[in-house]
Image 1 (spheres, rainbow, N blue to C red):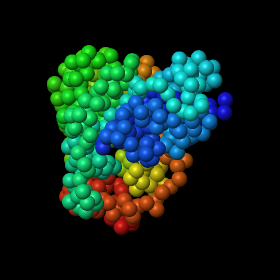
Image 2 (tube, helix red, strand yellow):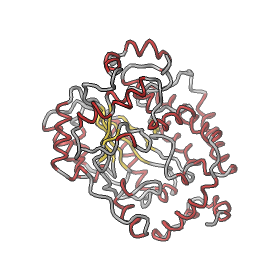
Image 3 (cartoon, rainbow, N blue to C red):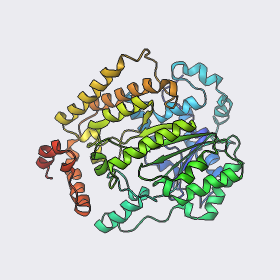
Length: 429
């Protein structure tokens, strides 16, 4: 079929809402331009989903790859499991037998019905819900819209003029409107919450309680936490749902994690990492270590894979880092990129002997194939490091940002990665 490479079923069952209340066509969407800045304040969810996403559906059915799909394209170019492939699996479409599985998919009739004008008569059953920027961390790759800590810091440093407006979920009427759509949707499958730090976001607890009180506990609940806080009440609330997917954000098992995910402390982070692993295994929850490899942490990625291997956990990133561009791993000069390549290569060789199949693992949450997926994912980062174009021209922007942010935090990247001193100094650090 002409659209075997580009077809994505996501716009027929999935959407998201960002921290300001704007609708997003896809959790993996690049730049999110195609949502036309429509928000929960402007139109109802069903109108946006059924009509406003029509052009994206038509593009897909015509065999095109919409501009919002760039991140998935890049992931697949480096043999990484993309959001598109994950979404296909949810509707029974298999990569190795695309045409036959598409025709037999229970969603095929709905795809056909959209062929004329792209509209649907459905409601989303798979959500990514951004609860705003309530956050106690100021990760260097993050943005004020996702971190209140970073927002205050950036305003102080003159990087932004105004603090981002309060999240949509601080408005009880909008939360009620959203929850009513959830209750009206048949067979809700997945609700994934992000922030900010979800465990300190009031709306997270409020929404969980409302779903429980209204007996809407059949959905899988997913969320991400930054391994700096713990909340026993939320643990008990989550236990009411059929299944929970826990995302654990971490970049390294060394103190460089403290710099990148400032002001975390690695001892506390590792303590909570072990605690989440323990409680999740006791309750049958699924766990993923969430990583955003940067120029400073990609060389430590092998340690993350090793911890995941030992504990039978998956490692996930939404995509290869896009912004800020100066923090991409591709900014690394060759000698340092080679260090990361060698470490990943050695880790893969250490474990590759246990991989007995060359089949591509798409279901990254299947406990029976987690270790196969880890090898596959490590190889995708290796592919990226070996083949992605060098972007050392972005070093001046990196140095400028580091100097500014460190002036407020009274720290230095050289205390965490002293091996980078010569090349950072030569770039003006």
